[in-house]
Structure formats: structure tokens, C-alpha cells
Length: 451
Ligand SMILES: [Zn+2]
Image 1 (tube, rainbow, N blue to C red):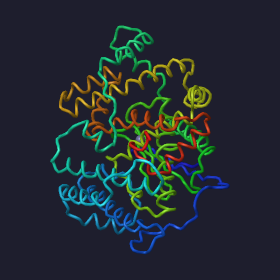
Image 2 (cartoon, rainbow, N blue to C red):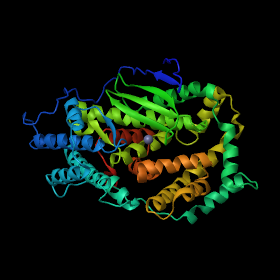
Image 3 (cartoon, rainbow, N blue to C red):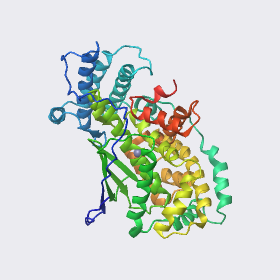
Image 4 (spheres, rainbow, N blue to C red):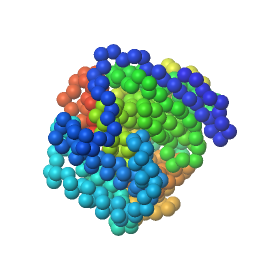
């Protein structure tokens, strides 16, 4: 592990992780064929699917011309990138082509089954999201939280009332008594857990190492996988994984606002192991490299795949650090590295559990905002009250909803769906890991999870 000199505006750290040679791998050793429409595949419908897949990739890349946030990752054929860059297709025209493409798939496709079937289901469901997002960009559809969750994320999250969260707020109030508004007391309490700037690298290195070691015990990672870690500011998110292909990622951590000690493992697992970096690398190996299915080399952010990505990344934290293990590791390793007093660690842990429950209040605030029931300062005030965020964090959350809409459900509701799927009838920790690894290596979408 080695670090680069920090550039002026942000600290950049390069982390090279060289995996130990895997033993007895399950990986197929088939060479990765480039798209070979008409080249004669052993599977009867494969040529058609390859052609559809190629058209889908092109549509996603072309829609990216109209929305900078849309194409989260692409590492497929360069010629498609160039073809998309030269395209002047409007969102309305892209929606029309996506509809025509979708009609070439069977009307009824089960949401689960073998990999070939999952491939067809994936393409059909992802295309529905392409159409919906293109229609939004074309101005053909008004903003609607429910429309986004169903068409973009393939799910129907439970709707909760803000009043449902009063008992959670009451417990926080008891834990942190005082006269000031609760969100100010929570923020004052959290201040003692802020990682000092000069300790940031050491803490994140140790956290990421631990996330990776725990993941490697259960999942065979690509031998040459690695990522670069950068510290940035002025973003609407707290961390981001930019997948580059070839089992490589750029992971950015936003240090604009204070970073608390618990975020090190959260972000290490979520962005790295067994979260986004791992998910992307496993999908690439299992589907793009081993099978030559190029549709998985593009990742449209506003699509059902994001629920699986965010849900598995958040569930992965608890998978890697079950029960008390996260707090124990933080007390033994991270608090000393950060020079922080661990005596309040358990109380902090309970406060964080309660704050996590308030995440669903955040979904409801986003729903009201997107549906035009509240606006501006009201949104920030509700985020402060019901998710106990500081004014700055609440404003950052509003910016997040401005940029990403109903995407917020993917974190908590996505985590719940992934947890239910992975833990269904599964007893041992190792079985959980294996089901989790299977999910991360297959094109399962939200509607595939309740089968
Ligand atoms: Zn994420």
C-alpha cells in the first residue's frame, strides 16, 4: 500500500491491493469474446441477445449525452462510445428506440431462473428504466416518487408517515437529554467522534484493509483488482465509487463536512469490500469476461441495478462486521489511530442505530419534495428534524435529492431487500457470504429477489 503526494485541493492516496493467488477457483477460463453477432454461438438465442445487448449499451450511452450523472461506468467497446458521442438523438427518440428494442424480448419473462433467463429479464427491466428516464428528460413525464421507484428501481418501497418516527426521536431524546433542539444535541454528541484531518489516511487504510481481509476469506476476488482512493470536497454525496473496468475503481471520499469514526468502515465496506468495487469486479468477471455479455459493461445509474448495488453495499457492512464486531474493531483499532476516546463507543453505536431507522423518514421527506408537497427551506428543516442532521448535512441531503431523485430508497430499502434475500433459510455466516457472492455475480434485479 503506498500513497501519492497530496495534490493542492485534495489528498490523493493510491492503494494497490494485490490479491493472493486464488486456489481452486470456480471461475470459468473461457476467453472473453468480443461481441460476435452472427458468429455462431452454442446457445440458440445468444446471437439475438448479443445484438439486443449491443443496442441497449448504445442507447444508455446516448442518453448519457443528456444527463451527466447517468452513465456511472462504462468499460465496453470503444467504438460504441464514439458512436454515442457522435449521436444527436433526442431523449424522445431514444425512448422510442428503447421501446422498440424492448418489444423484441418475450412478453413474459420470469424474474428468476438460469443465467440466460436472468439475462433476458435484466435487459427487459433495465430497458423499462431507460424508457422512463428518457421520457423524464424529454419532459414527457412529471416528477413522481412512485413512478421513479417502480420504473427506475423495479420496486415498491413501504410508505411511512413522519409521525411513525416520533418514538425513535423520543429514544434519542432520552439518550441525549437537554434543552436545545434534538438535532443540535445529536451533532454536539457526534463531534467527539470526528476523525482529525491528519489521521484520516491512517484510519481509512486500516478500515479498508479490514474490510478487504474479511471479504477475501469468503469471496475469491480477481487477482489484479485494486482501487485508487481520493479525498475530495464539494459533492452532494459522502463517498463514490467510479468503476473503471479491469477490476479497478476510483473511490472518492468527501471530506467537506466532518467525517466521523464510524464512517471509515461504512465507506470501506460500502465503496470497496464487499460493496461497489467488489460487485462491479465480480459482475465483470462472471458476465463480461467469462460470457462476453457486454450489457454489463455499462452501468446506468438511474436503473434497477442501482438498488442491488446500494443495497448490497450497505448490507455488506453488516456481513463483514456482524453484531458487535464493528464497534469492537473500531474501539480496538480505529479509535486509537484517530486519537479518540472510545469510552462512549457503545452509546454512539446505539445513537447510530436509531439514526439508521430514521433513514426511512428521509425517504418520506424525499417523496414529499419530489411530489411537490414541500419545497426549499422546508425540506432542509424536515431533514434536520426527522433525520437529526446538521443544517449543512441536511442541505447536502436536499442537494442529493435534487440530483438523484428517488435514488435515496436504494440505500435502506435496498439493504432490506438484499438482507431478506441473502438470509432466507440460511443459517451459517459462510452460507450468507456464498448467497451474497452469487447475487453479486449474477444479473439479478429487485424483482428477482422475492422469488
Ligand atoms: Zn453507494
